[in-house]
Image 1 (spheres, one colour):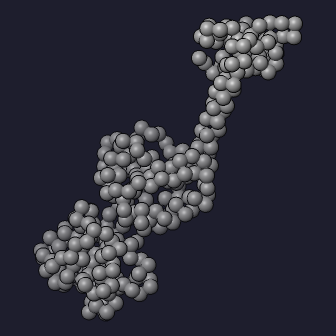
Image 2: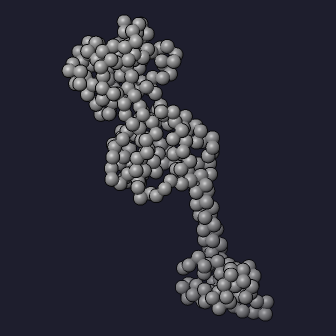
Image 3: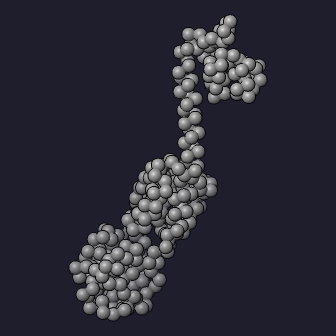
Length: 295
């Protein structure tokens, strides 16, 4: 059953005349008649009888009419939904996001996105960058945000460079200094977070490069807990700059430089399937705001 058949049926019902219905849908009278006959053949019933007042519905035609109207309305609603999606005014946006990104980078972006697109439903699913990559590959999300993990089926767009910074409590002996060496850092109780993260790998690589081994380590599974431990002088930590910016500004944590460390930086990227084509609608609007993040 074709949409053109249903639309032709409805137009004949509205106008009660085949020729006027044909003019309304911009086809010839024989073409419209053929559509009605084809529809009747498919349904196995006559839908119209011709009378003095024009085309009149049969009992079968009257029974079919509300379903034809709903089908036509559903198609119109679908067209409107696509138009709204393309314009970014409505729809759904599915985002996969690494925990640190969802906590410290994503909120201001979503705040601006929600203000500009209040009718768009946003769903955020979190996981490690490897999990986010799998979400994108399986088309479970439209955009993934995480560290740079290359895959031939994915297109990566960098939007932020995250840096690990050394933080100590304001009352820590190091706090009066501007920078310390990796060897000095190794002598302290080091608070680490999330052994599976790329930040953990960066930290270990920096110590290996300096040829030193941390004296002792305190391992936690999240950044917020690590910050609280540092504030209580239970150790020092290397944490993402965006995660500690507020505490540094408030003076509850102090940032120091490292004199002989490897670059402690990771690029954060937006991941999309290559076969998804150029971004449009809500995805394009979100990526545009993402690109406006201060590096």
